[in-house]
Length: 384
Ligand code: PLP
Image (cartoon, rainbow, N blue to C red; front, side):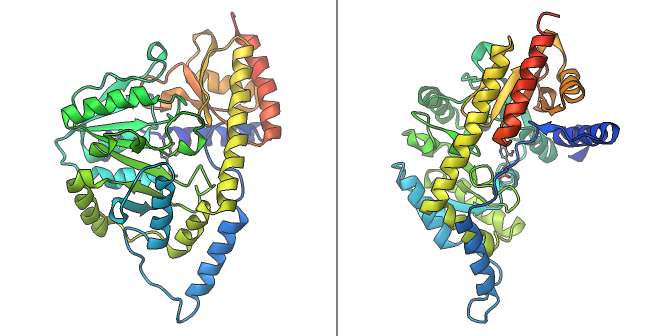
């Protein structure tokens, strides 16, 4: 139901404010705003896409519509990726997509309209927009400083959205916390839509796939994306896993796809296949390391200047506005006093007010300048 949507999507607001700033000042600010990829795609992906294009230019190699569920060569690589994490999947449990956002939208079509959803908040604003558009009933699961932005008391519901690590807070559930959530979900018959778009940034003991948890296949649909891991924000490719334990939903999704989707282009899938090559894996590792290091520097800059912030396992730092400023007031201060762009927390459903999100998708050089400016602004506004 379009009429239920809020007037402005937060990233559109940010883009418009930046445009006004540029017109007024003639300067280009440093962006810690939108979480868009910044590294050029690796050569191996480029070459595979070029070759796929050349193949389509031949009589023998030409292909028309792709399979809606994805090409076997890519699905095999995805299955192998899970196998390396000791998770066994079959071909018909994996669906290649044109990105997590599109699949989240399509996934809602497998649930009846009267079903009740729960979304953590603050969170990626698309979840709430989709629920409004499709007319689902929903309630919030409040993430805040007192629960370290990781609520675990899940109310009875049919659909639970989880974003781990979270956009915008960067908070990441531990295995134990996820086990508790999964136990509750199984007890209540809840299906979890587990948005794993930032899993490539996870290191150490934190789970890269929720299916590492014993009973997760009974209640979790995992949604993944190559957008942030391999600079595919513009190319568009990802995948969703619906385990056979959720047979009914798996079958429904297949049926829905055949009505609302025509698959991902062959060229794109040949490119995505190479993300799993040695060169592709090295690219993911190196680029995510740089981004995580930027996030660490941003976090340190805020903290060392007396600010309060959260995050660390993802490209986002969620920082409290100093002096009780609203997120849009602080957004303006950062932009006009320091030439820095952030994303106001009020745009991430409810509960994000008085916070801003800093994105670490920026060059190391820009990050150096930005962190210096952040230190200055936090020192200036601290205690005023
Ligand atoms: N999920 C989350 C939590 C995101 O933050 C984003 C994009 O920022 C997406 C999904 C969209 O991913 P994709 O580019 O694969 O559509």
